[in-house]
Length: 451
Image (cartoon, rainbow, N blue to C red; front, top):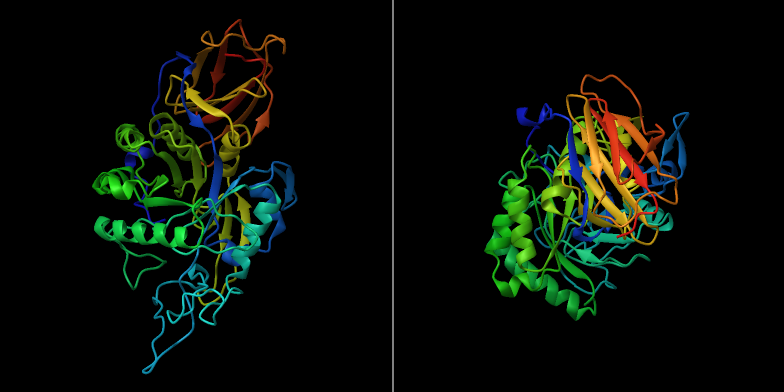
């Protein structure tokens, strides 16, 4: 959740000549689990907002600010189980010392108030705190979200079954300080190993054997690979899934592939569990997302703060009072529409297949015999041909008609198409040829596709 600024390497996307790419369903990377976002810190302020819940967790048309928006249909919720408390205990009294630089809305109340008792029914626990974040979690659940993850160390039950618990957040990073502007805690790999052992034992002791331990949510792919490779087999065996954050921006797949190869060698799945940057046009989101699915091969992809200021959010927000949990909602960014190109069409249960191209994500829905292609085009117009000859059929029953949607993502700030449908695209036999405008993201749905 802390990231270096987006560097010069990301400020322009590559310009390629016209090209053809072959989509190969024989090369697949597992069933897609879905799209998500963290609830902290925005839900600590806006957790009672039904419109935000509809925007993020449904795919219906949602009215916001006098305009209709396509709901993103996120199905993964990452709940921040906080560690803040106002209770003081002991003689002399001991209590939490908050950083003078952390605003109140970034302080998440913890349910465990003191260390006198580990019994959740004792008065060492208060299950009524953190009400707004819990509200948004419930709203997400009621709208269809089906995967919930805690990124903290203790399980809870509020009518929600958590599939995984991650006890860390960027633990190897060196920037966590007591006077920092947000929550954070440093754990070197040796300490992580001990926490993982204790957490797995505690979950098992509480009959939560099906709740996976996820680790370690490192900030970059390189950090994640180093941490994972440092774990002995006995610790790796306790980790059900590897999580990583996407703050290693860039135009190459090397660090992503290194992490994927290390995790795959141990038979684990990967989630890209947090991504964000401060560019509201969305072009860099699409480019990094495409690189992730091409080289990292996660089975889920999560944005960090869907509501945030400083152009990081999909919906803008201002938090004017650092001493209170209050805020004002603003405009929906262009990045929202770019994200919708992926989230609304690549759905849980589909299989990510090899697109042959780092600018394209390809997903196959066997139940509906549908192929989805999402492509980001960089700084120059391009003519791209998708070769579908490795499928048995494509588009025949639909008369070769291909449905499509496009969002323009212009770093100059100009607004173009925002999730606009329709250009009457058709297949030519087993080939689809499309002329892309510069700095755009397009989605194509092709029916009657069989392998």
